[in-house]
Image 1 (tube, one colour):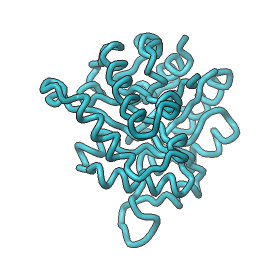
Image 2: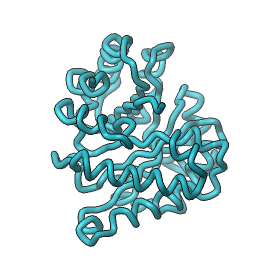
Image 3: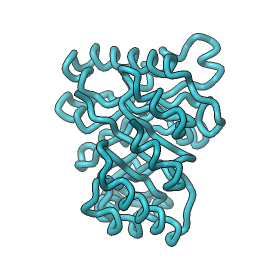
Image 4: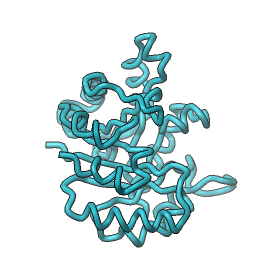
Length: 249
């Protein structure tokens, strides 16, 4: 039985005071939540949020990491620095990193392996552009991103990887893949994991959905057989919108 995993990606939002207020509200309102939870504040907010959520049922995530442990990499943030702040999970391969900042599968894979090697868990994002879906290539794109993103990741480490399917055309647009469309891709990607790592691994891996997840569509999405949680963007920025998703029934 896979446990639902609801994560909030705050992207480039919040001052330290705002982040502290939101983190405190989530700790209070999710303390009786039944699922697995994570928040991923911006880098400058991690030190503020970490002590607030420490000891709660909310994990601390980072939105990215550098592909190298340390060195002359101006403007980058090391996994060692993230661990020092108490980060437990890092989100990698998000569509904005892929399509705005032009990160390719090889770079994302390097980050995945580095994060795992340093003991961090990973949320690996995959998803197709609108034109790729319209061309009938959604499954192919997601398979390629999954296979290349996990290249060299050993079966023993796969238990620390969560996949997040985010159709790029549904992120921040108000459009959402239908629960049926989303579940179909999730099922296909689970099949990719089956080919790579076997049936047991395919049944265990958590696959989140991301892309305009809201309180009024969360339960429908989570009801699908292959959807195991959500990676939430805009709705994660307020407790009043994130908590109903996190505590869906």
